[in-house]
Image (cartoon, rainbow, N blue to C red; front, side, top):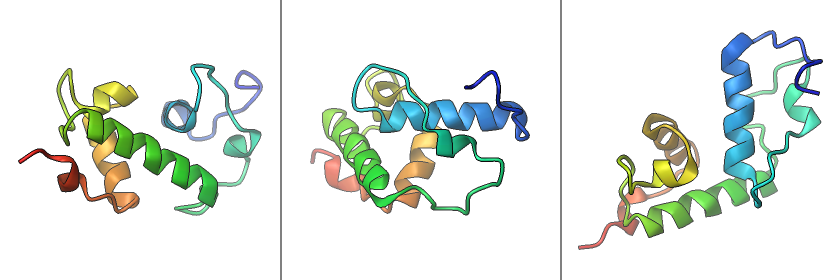
Length: 104
């Protein structure tokens, strides 16, 4: 399926699909939803509600495990397998209060 897609967004589109799969995955199996490869771009914030909830839970769990730390080897971004800047962006878009996970 990935090889047959024309990738009009080029490498960035492929990267986004892979990142989305890693964030949303509940198992260690890599999978891609066909709707992510639609020929027409989806509007911003178009993830279905259950996928947003799942992504939020995974990010909050990683933040809890890392005591609110985003970057570094023991940070939430490393646990989720994504760049810290991407995680920061997802935290903002999901309106997660990252400070609630920091130990005082």
